Length: 328
Ligand code: UDP
Image (tube, rainbow, N blue to C red; front, top):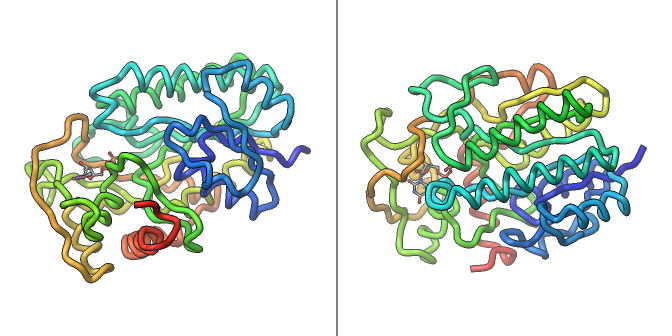
């Protein structure tokens, strides 16, 4: 069996951590990335093939050269704010791109597909804990585009036998514990890195997007999971697929929700510095509360998060943020 895995988005935050974990486990991760949001210097754990997801000829070439046994599909755009403003870009990139990739995989006979989906496919559900059977009602085009890709995979499984594992991520945080790679978006909009920039003084402050939600302190609740734990689940999902265990959807969250204010308090404690904060209006498209209520990944895959407590996630992110790899 080929030891090669095609990793789309391998130059990005989660994809680069997946490549590192794949290499450590004896796989050869081939990164396919258009570098629109990823970083060439994050591709250190296997070959690099530059290309766009919508470029079918380029994908065919890469499948033919590397003959991967599976695809891990991370490449996507993922900002709720942008998705509300420019939904067409989200559909083109995440759905047309994902569809082209799935068609190329089937044509090449690469029938194992691991897909990065999101809790944003659930939408606003009145503070209930979310499991894989919860209705999916996305509130923004990011969630809609990921849900559409899930449906494409189901149809391709039925028609073409494309085996897939779908992971619905909650909020991914933290950085490689070795400090080699980490989160690095330009522009940055995610809560923890924005907050660390504010603490470090490289941006004026953090604005809380909405303080009038029906939650315990008025701010949104999210379930945060460490990127290292998240990618560990992908390796287990790959084994699941290669063992022929079939198509399966898994939430990846810890089941513990933190409000924005609670995250800010933890960051103050970890960094021992004040967090400059202002309160602003709600951000369009945000759900009040997204927390996983599933134990399926633990039960089926044996997945156990090890670094997903808030202190460790912020400490790992802060170490990366302060280190030489983080470009300010
Ligand atoms: N958030 C915030 N200020 C920021 C960035 C994010 O208050 O500068 C809030 C956001 O409204 C949401 C939570 O933090 O409730 C997590 O947002 P993030 O963008 O990190 O991830 P998302 O949940 O959108 O995937």
